[in-house]
Image (cartoon, rainbow, N blue to C red; front, top):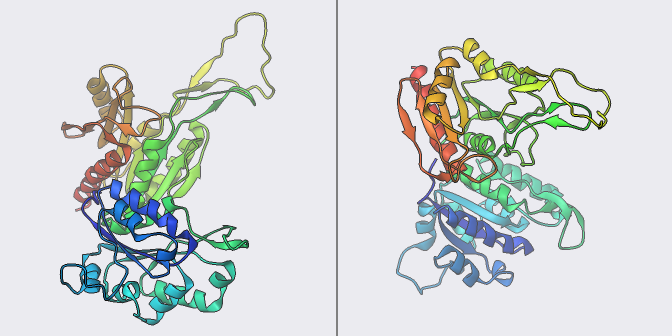
Amino acid sequence: MDVSGKTVVLGVTGGIAAYKACDLVSRLRKKNIEVRVIMTEHACEFVQPLTFEVLSNARVVTDQFNRDFPWEVEHIALAKAADVFAVVPATANFLAKAANGIADDMLSTTVLATRAPLVIAPAMNTAMYEHPATQQNIETLRARGAQFVEPASGHLACGDSGKGKLADVEVIEEAVLSALTVKDLAGKTVTVTAGPTREALDPVRFLSNHSTGKMGYAIARCAVRRGARVNLISGPVSLTPPQGVNLIPVTSACEMREAVLEALPQSDIVVKAAAVGDYRPAEYADNKIKKKNDDMSVSLVRNPDILAEIGTLRRDDQVICGFSMETRDLLENSAKKLNAKNCDVIVANNLKTKGAGFAGDTNVVTLLYRDGRVEPLELMNKGDVADILLDRLAALSAKQNV
């Protein structure tokens, strides 16, 4: 779902992790999100306001009584401008002020005035974080609807080790993007398959393919942002699962089939983005197959066709989406797959098209629908492909459940 043009007001407080907020501003701006930064007096001791002004392309607010700007009641203007209000990092002092309604500087005053969703990423010494007063303040704010990005455990700047380290910027960014996103899939369960499968020959070797899982993981991430309960059934990949998904790791096609069939009855939308192996060795060798002087042949048997099976088991109110990767006759072969597998949508791409296929961060796909419509999409980031696809699947789900 497009969040470009949205406004995030970012509060930066006086902790050593303040420099990490610079990376967050840069990431959000790359998504065409407007960022307005409010810094506390102590935050300015760690990072100069000019740094945030260059990154955000907007004036940083530091002083509640600064008159060097076009007249407006600035804390109210910023409070109203925010689609999401984030505080990164949030010190114990800020949490105490926000929980108790204290408004004695620009940041705390604006937070008190805003009605935007509040995302808070605490960072502080472990003893301060675990202190009952801080925990009570966190619970008070959480009860009022604030979303917290839990701090990580690790070595802290003060030399201690424990919980209190600012969460990874990627995690905070995801929380902000989720807060910006309309929850049009709330109440829906989306099951996504991703990555390759591996079919073992022996304890050392296996048959597989080049799928990295990036497309499936992007779909799962976008579905979580949009409020869905997400089952992510993943083959072996090196990706970090999106926050909030129910990850179901599998290895072989048969394991993936079992997981999909178990999730199917509770699923409103199923997206089969995994590159499932069509064949597996007819026999598995318990010990490593030793090299010999002559050639070797391996007998293969068909794996179950998971998409075809769920196409026969599906309910009329479920939406099923498959993927089709081809190297020739893309539309013809994909249309045959759409009809044969009883899908609502097939996402088709050609491995030979520049910018499409495995491993990359972009894709070029064509959406084929059951009613015969064909919708080609231009080259774009896989996250954008995922959002457009979910737009279409959400619309089909709403139509089928009228």
